[in-house]
Image 1 (tube, one colour):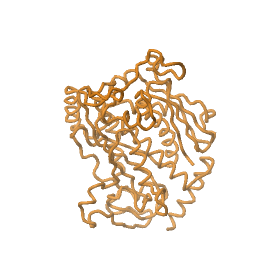
Image 2 (cartoon, helix red, strand yellow; image 1 turned 135 degrees about the horizontal axis):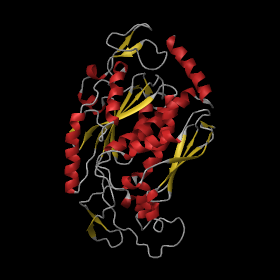
Image 3 (tube, helix red, strand yellow; image 1 turned 60 degrees about the vertical axis):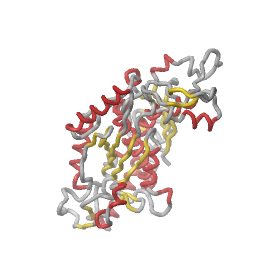
Image 4 (cartoon, one colour; image 1 turned 180 degrees about the horizontal axis):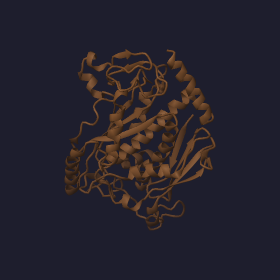
Length: 408
């Protein structure tokens, strides 16, 4: 079983993530993980914290000479801002002179967390509930991406809306559109908004600038696409093995995500079945399918293909061989420079919520975090189906499945 756990607080000494279940023989280097961490820190509208932190990972166990050992991989990311918080966030000592945070901010975990864990200082809650924790998850996702890359599986994302300004993005997301999907991802990587349509950037910038001027914040929508996934990951047999359910849970676990769609998403509710379900076609292997640039994108594919992908690559809780397409909506960051009203948990008096340093817009960063959590879930499902103790063994198992597909 592939799994991970993160530890650390927003202004603590460091963040740690331990990834268990990685097979042996996977080539990993810190530079690859650092690139993913840098992608997470980018984007227009980020706050002052990003100017302080320049995230770098230290791999402290689980590797030898650049290869995984099959033992747990421990990754550490140091918080540079710790220098300013040593007394407040000291793991040991007494509270002498420390002022408790008693004013919960609307939209945060502050009040609910304090009630659940019976604490009178909201800093005990806000430090861990902070999205700073997603740096550790991004590092874990970077390992998962490395594993998936060995099997031709890639994870991409782009932003399709910020503060009401939206772009269409690549419309078709089938095997035949793989080149277009990769081009959209490349364009998004060059955009401060991670938007593949450059002309929409100006509208997104206006939305963020207007929110900044008002002391407000904006949310948005992003898409995550996974290419190269063979059919059969997940299962229709048990509810907790359904791939779409697992991916939706992973995306919803990212801070500030309030809605998730698969494929056509909510449009299926207002569309007739004839426009929703993807028709199935077949052509002999080696022949070019009509209307498709390529049969599909996993090696040794069978001749089955689709000309639409409204299902988002998942049917009956299983991958069907088309790209997995998911969309998530992120709410505006709840920490505002134009504070909202709240109630002090100690005095019970009304006040305007305090301001912690924050972003105006973090949608581009959230899309990178989403890639990480989606990659990890896909890797989990992949190892469940083709499991082995080493990359070499998994590849042998995978080749056997591809031979099975050829004969289907």
